[in-house]
Length: 219
Ligand code: DX5
Ligand code: ZN
Image (cartoon, rainbow, N blue to C red; front, side):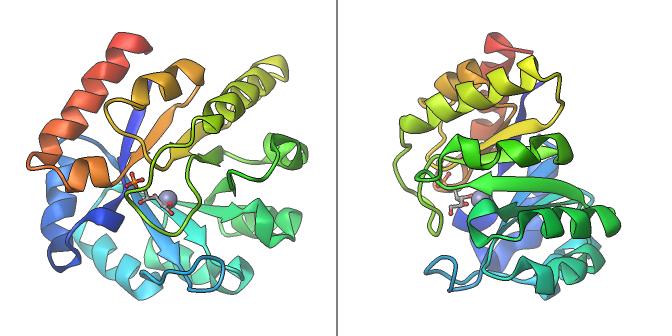
């Protein structure tokens, strides 16, 4: 089953609650991009905003932490209502962060940047619920999908099958109606889609189209 995870990064932040209501009509998942201005050059939202959104929405909150020091904030995200938190392998202390997420009863995600080799995440794959493969350099929406991500998706999918593991595979960056089929074919289970949805005139229509396309390719 393929999940479409709208990334609200490209949405109009002045209307977030309305947008979450609209998203909930067609999917149960929402990808929240948390940026600290250090790990990535951009700054977005933090736990207080997640907490406010949680009061208005029952969507599954998939919090992608593009922050240098997740250890300091994981508890706040849990309290704010995050369901899943994803930390980047590049920030280090991965085992400790996974243990912390486990203790907080957060679903555990691990992300890797386009220039990080798949081998770096392998030692942690049996401990995580989700592997997030970046198909752009993190920091901004609206970038072009990097085709190299397809190789990484295939490697992750093959590794999961060969080792009988169950983590879900998420792809993030430049995913749209043209690039999604290749991602699904290569093994992605969750498609993060920002600008293709929110810069369209018909956001709900795009989510529905992505879902139909996914059903046609793989269940
Ligand atoms: C980029 C973020 C993405 C971003 C995707 O750093 O992690 O989630 O919102 O946006 P698009 O789909 O526009 O590439
Ligand atoms: Zn993201």
